[in-house]
Length: 511
Image (cartoon, rainbow, N blue to C red; front, side):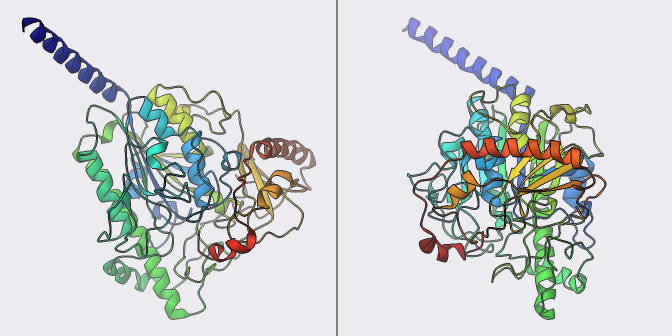
């Protein structure tokens, strides 16, 4: 009996020491919080120049940390962008070529290593809340789910909150459907994020939360009091650059619907700001703010008005940029980006160094003291030097590929102040979903035409300098082609893709 008591006592001491060690590690390593919007344009926040929408919480977040003027998503479309952020790998390299419809075979493969998996293995509590969109067979055993990619706790949807972003019924929590939820989706997502921080995690561990709002993607639904507040302010279209090449006028021909659609969109972004404010207040309440790195951004540029039948509220703004969602000009891939970490990042900074969501994995790995995967190509770079006010050296230039781009360029690369874009010939692609035959195009087509812009001096990409800068074009286009062909070789084929005719009906559904 005495020996048992001694063993029990030693075991208790061991557990206490382990808990103390975990707590010490949690105190030394930062927490990570990513807040990602869906289709939020570069010009949709007050802090990025929107003349109407009020975003006081996000403006304060930027003042307390750093606002990125040249923040990029990994792709101009949702599923691809999310795959890039999670893995640090260019989406086409890992086979996420476009948005993923429900039931589609394309998914983030089980053998891909995500930042959530790496942090979980390193002792972090991990949580995903909101839009997942990294598989077609959501909550089904045939494809990996959020829990299989490193999340201890998840409450997610396959794509949009449905049937509406008001009172959605399609959330799944840790594999169990939870039925109709009352309220608007961004507030429901914020509720779950706060509950995780307060109750549903091991408090001896640091945490990683990936909070993915559905807003302001269609079908837009906004609180009536906010819509009423914005109706008087939405009567006149804002003065932006949508009429420039690669963009379209954002005015609905029906004046009454145009006003209501603007008010609903503006209110939608304002409601997101409210939800962000609630999450940040929870960080304050639970004493996490000082040692939590918060990254706020968007998955791609803003949706084009009336691109599909139900998209009549899509009044997002690319600000001064050319193009929109689904374009490889900057309006499709340059997005708002805010970083805050009071323990390390000096407040009030405006940073013009290019940063991309591909940088999340190597950056978080370095800050958490873990090694990024060494057995595969990573396309992002750790931006830890930037956080400390030091120069950032990027060995691999930022690269984008989107084979279904709505404008000519199918690939782009940024090197310093320069953006080079490459196009195929004029072969048209059917718009819809990834189908059998598309992968052959992806893996075989050559870049044959190039454009060159100095995006520091010409933020709207209005003047193609390829004729004036032949030597620079030759050098940068060679870099672009080399990276493009490397990614082509690695791109998976997805042998079970649907045929074109069978996929047409699904393709009519908005991504």
